[in-house]
Image (cartoon, rainbow, N blue to C red; front, side, top):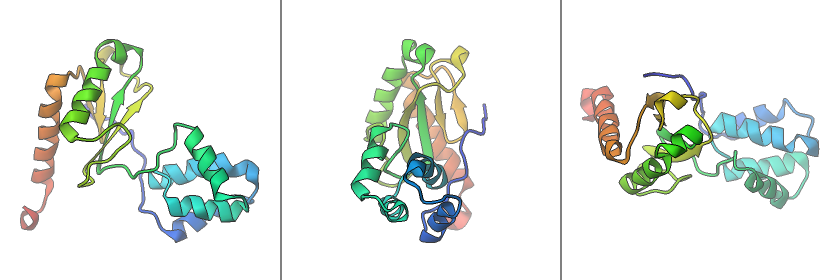
Length: 173
């Protein structure tokens, strides 16, 4: 099952950050909106972006960091090449979403909110994916995996790695 759920994320650059700032007046009341746009653009809040935002709004960097850490919508580490989202909505939670999350943490050797050292996978919980009839649901990149279980985690990750190896040019294999 395929679903387009991921925005196009670009690598952080000062130029892209400045392009974001051109859409704002530089008022403190814009802080959350700008943080959201930075997060949407880069996939996380790079430290350099938060420092640049503090300069742009002429507020202490501790204020920017304090607001960003208050809201759980913001992340401070980059997404993996294959972001994994585990649904924790009511249906998914009741049908084992927590156990699936724990199995992914063990298999990837990371915790929710982290990225694997090779940058391939990141792991997050989400409130609802909207596929309750398929619960519990996990999304890897754009692929929806229905009726997940801790036993299916290793298989799904192996399939993703196999898919990656098939997509590599022969010179990289």
